Image (cartoon, rainbow, N blue to C red; front, top):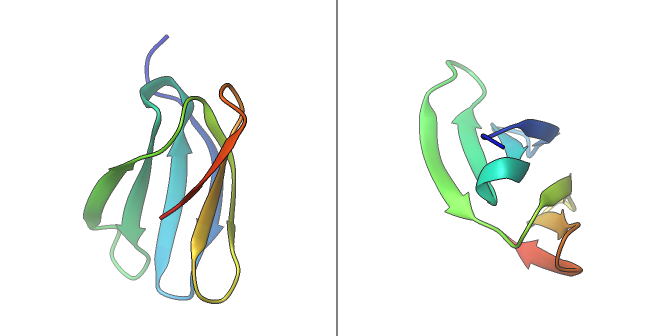
Length: 68
C-alpha cells in the first residue's frame, strides 16, 4: 500500500496531513502550499489534531499518540 492521506489539521499557519501508508505526517505552509517537512509518526497515523500549542497524531496500528 502506498502513501495515502487520511486526515488533516490546521495550526493557524500550516496544514498537517497524515500519510498512513508511509507512517508519517506532511507539513505544508497554508499560504502557498510549500512543503515544510515530513515527520515520522507511529504505525498507521490517522487522527490528527491541534490543541493550540502542539499537533497530536493518533496511530491506529500501534495504539500510540505522537506529538509533532
